[in-house]
Length: 99
Image 1 (cartoon, rainbow, N blue to C red):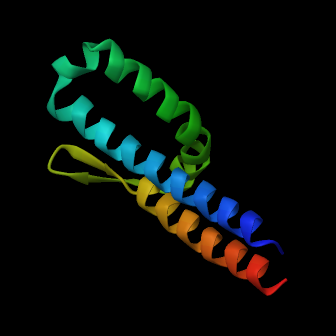
Image 2 (cartoon, helix red, strand yellow):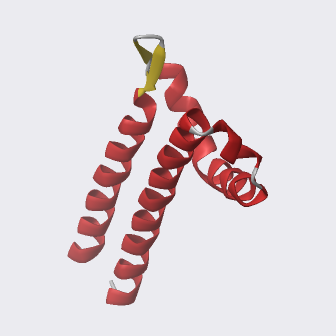
């Protein structure tokens, strides 16, 4: 397999990890600084991130429970998705390298 294809697949997975990280940070912003959520830039970024990560998280949220921590919910589906992305990246890039 050409090295360019392998690197492209790796970059796509890394970008997905960064978008997931942005999702986590934006969820904290919404929770800790609600006034920032009226900022049009934050709204636009949130919509873009949600359009990418939302379809991946929705099925996981139906399976993985939210843990209640002192009146605050911890969404474990985000952690599960991060692990799934990591494992998928390693498997797919590893398979492409060995082709």
